[in-house]
Amino acid sequence: MANQRDLLIKHFESRSSISGVEAATIYKIRSLPRRILDLKQLGYQFESEWKTDPTGQRYKRYTLTGVPDIAGNPVSYYTNANR
Image (cartoon, rainbow, N blue to C red; front, side):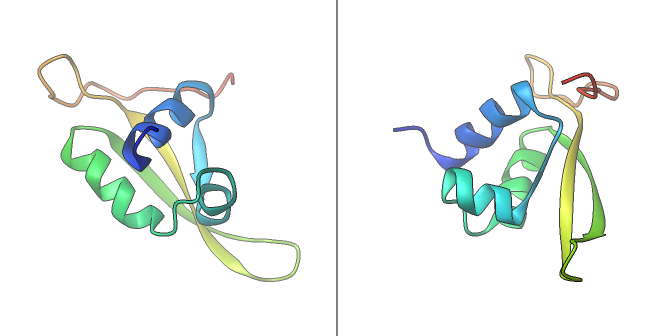
């Protein structure tokens, strides 16, 4: 079974962003901010934005903007917007 960090990396291969509700529902990740921090420490880059759902609940959406190179150094901005 893949660890949570690996599940998120796989998620970002086909999607550009994720919210806490999506992470909890799809991958059973209960602390998305911590997993995003783990990925940042590996060289991944993210932007985050507060959103509001139709019921008025606020949530944060994380969007992948950069990936590490083979040596783990951040690479210039990455876009996955077409997926």
